[in-house]
Structures are given as C-alpha cells and as structure tokens.
Length: 206
Length: 225
Image (tube, rainbow over all chains, first blue to last red; front, side, top):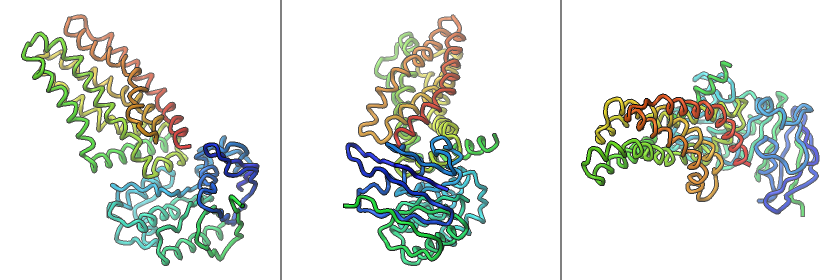
C-alpha cells in the first residue's frame, strides 16, 4: 500500500503544491489531473523516488521509500515523458535490457509476445530510431507486461498512441488493477477503466 | 551476488553494443589521440634526443585530453532519452551500474589508446622497455581517468556548458595521474625503474575503483532531481 502524507513540492521559488495526502490500496487507480505546469510530473517523480520532496513523506507498506530504495524499486515501474528507449537498439534489445536490469527473467519469446500484444509483432528487430513516436511509446509500454511490479506510475501514457493502442493500454490497466495492482497516471484524455476504484487528484486548483 | 554480476554484465554489453553502433563517436577519441601525438614530432623537428625527452609527457597529455573529450558521452545520451532515470529506478545498486558504465566507457575510449600508444611511441624513438612502460602506465592510468571523470560527468549532467565545467572539475584530479604516468616512463628510461610510479598509479586505481562509483552515483541522483 502506498501512503503519501503532507507532501510539498517546490520547483525553483514556486511552491507547486503543499499538504498533499492520499493513499492507494491494491486494485486502485489514481488519476492526477491538473493544468500544464501544475506539478503532475513532479508529483509522479517524487512518488517513484527520483526526486526528494521538499516536505512530507511517502511510505510503501508502512516504510519510507527513502529508506527502502532498491526494495521499493522492485515493486515499481515508472514510465516518464522520456520513454527510456535507446534509438540504436532494437525493440527486442531495449526490452530485454530493461527487464534484466529490473531483475526479471525475460526470454526472447516472452518479449516477442509482449511486443505482439502491443501491436509491434514483426517489428522486434528494427532499431528503435526507425519506429514512429507512437511505436516507440508502445515499446516503452510493453515494459509493463514484462516487469512484474505492483505499482505502475505512468506519466501521460496515452500520448502519441492511436485509438487501438489506447484500448490495449486500457485493457492492460484494468487487468493490472484486477490482479491487485496499483496505478498512478496523468493524462489529459478521459480514461475509462472498467475495473477497480478510480481516485482523482486535482492539482493547482484556482 | 549473481544478480549483481548479471546487472554489471548487462550494462557493459549494452554500452559496448551501443558504442559499436555509433562507431564515429568512439573513433573520434582515438583519432584525436593519434593526431595530437603524431603532430608533435612534425612540429618539434627530428631531433631524437628532444623527442625522447618529451615523449612521455606528450603521450600522456594527449591521452588525458582524449579521455576528457570522451567524458561528455558517458552519461549524456542515457540522460537525454530517459534510460538513465530508468537505471536509477532499477532494484540494482546504482554504483554497480555506474561501474559497469565506466568499465564499458574505458573499454571503448581508454583501451584503444593503450593499445596504440606503443606504435605512436616509435615516432619518438622510445626504447622497447620505454614503450612497454608507456603502455603499462596507460593501462593502469586511463581507468583512473575514466573513474574520476565519471564523477565530473555525473555532476555536470544537464548543466549548460557542462563540457567546460567538467574540465575544471576533473583536471585537478587528473594531474597526479599525469605526473606519475609520465614519470613512470621517464624513470624507466633513466634507469631508475618504473616500479614506484606504477605502484602509485595502481594505488590511485584501487582508490578510484572504491570511491568513484559511489560518488558518481550520488552525483547522478542529485543531477536527476
């Protein structure tokens, strides 16, 4: 379970938000709303442990993520604005490397299946630089299928995706929630996740 | 332990694959080194005695500059495409990954210098044992440059004008390596034996191996904030 208490975010001299509290139980999705620059990405980066909050604490199963470090990262998959895809490597190589670093065993056929699910069947061996933006996004999203993590933190997962891919990702999310996973995401699109509880946070309320 | 070595091997293999697919970057360092070292005999003139005296210094300074030239590449491309932040979020200890990256970086930018240095040394009329000590001192010294450089590269990540800043940060720490590296060749040619210098370089290497991965990891975490 993820608990966030009294979180404050300061960027430069500006305080983006303060006193934020929420908790996330297995099977729940948190949808972070807010205008551009309201601190959505900053919140997500704090929750996944990339940045330290100015104030407040984030706890995973009752322990601060600052002290858990690697034990927390074992349970989390973060997908940021930058997809984390190496242009010179093929889709297959990209995914196998991220899986191996995440400490999961990802044999080639499993990766091929994951890529197939996201509609990239037959393009496994193309270098990522010849893929389109949307296809690169799909490769990045295929990571979710490979890493058996419980908490998914997704920053604008639907950008550059076509309608079919958005559907696939929604199915992925609902299945993950159904299996007791947790999701935090930001998106400007209306998401319709059929399973689980959807919580909402609005940042930068005027 | 096995997962640590697996992660280390994975990063090294990844970075070497990347380097092989971006060969121009790798060759720049080597090319720079070869050109600088080869230009000196042309500029200084064919006076054998002078060339022998300046050889260790020239080769070492060129190696140092070449290694600094390559520093920017160590983390920057991973930083730009987001793979670095993914690396920070893996369950593997970051110093192990950093050590893997530094090792791969040295294999593609440091090791070629070590291998080609004896050939370039011939232009300076270095005696065979001088060439051997030159290669040996570079073999021990260039990893130190990569390790120390990793700290500087990590600290200046994402900073505008990082290239200049990294030289300012790293150069003072490079100087002892330069002194003892070039000194080793000098000592061996004057008959004193290079052992003392090489031992000191070895000590630098051990110290850097232990400290640099931690320092660079901490610096990376700060730069990514």
